[in-house]
Image 1 (cartoon, rainbow, N blue to C red):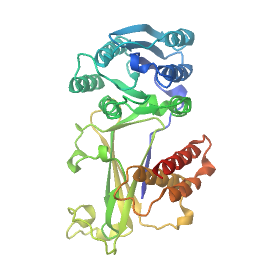
Image 2 (cartoon, helix red, strand yellow):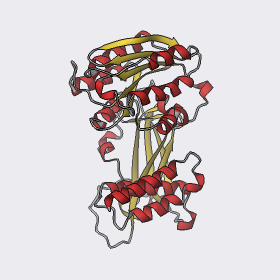
Image 3 (tube, helix red, strand yellow):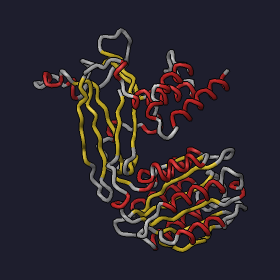
Image 4 (cartoon, rainbow, N blue to C red):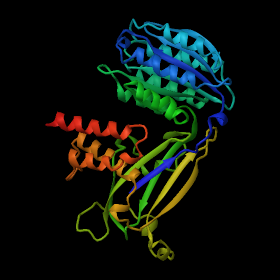
Length: 381
């Protein structure tokens, strides 16, 4: 079963004004072609998307942190791009100090009811500075509560600290992306402009309850680092993920149908298993219920949205290309990790599945995926 969420789409003209601070790592480790030079090219794309009501400041950090551009309106694109072009890499990395200064600049230029956001571009090597990881996370959380969010962009390879970057983006109510070429930069800053920069829902949580009359067992594919305890779903103090305008999230569940001989662990009774449930008959055509909680930005209390999933079965020939693509990506992930759940999956059948989604591949992403799978297959052999 595929569960898809999409954040409300807003026209660019209707998005709130942005107060952005580019926080750029210019330490010595950023000198290679796929780091600082790519950061400059990527951020120039974003600058070209700015409107007159938007403004940008630039903070850099290496051995020390400093501001290289005051808050500048989006109409003065040349001034912003010139400041980016003049950046050079060298020195050690004082990431914590850079974040402190960036938050200070963001607060000084804060736009009420606007999009106040730091965009951190780094290879993730925070190896010098006053802040431990825990202190840095607390600083990010504190400023999140004040309304300044953090988007994190990762660049390069070698000393790349993927888990650290994703963690501080999560703590900062922002998103995280890895950019390894100019095509990916275009995807993040032009194709997904709103999803990258403008939040429409905070602390988004998904909870799926399956009807045991239809489903004997299930497994969420992936998201191992995103799982919540059952009691956390209703706890509005528990932090969760954010969604931007037009942002999509996909989850896949592997299902064992009722009546299967496969053994599965016992589960606690829930909605469909209530004893003496007088309303049990009304659930007979439901396979599951998808519950979603989210907060409107600025609100502290979450809202609940529920959707019952009917138990209609589909012929494999009628499955959408969107579903086939999601299944191919998930299957590829299991093969890369050599998952114990990969079953009879293979690189060849993953390629065939992805090929069936090529008809809607306007941007070439599916073709790129297929090439990645072929490369992985060759490396494995």
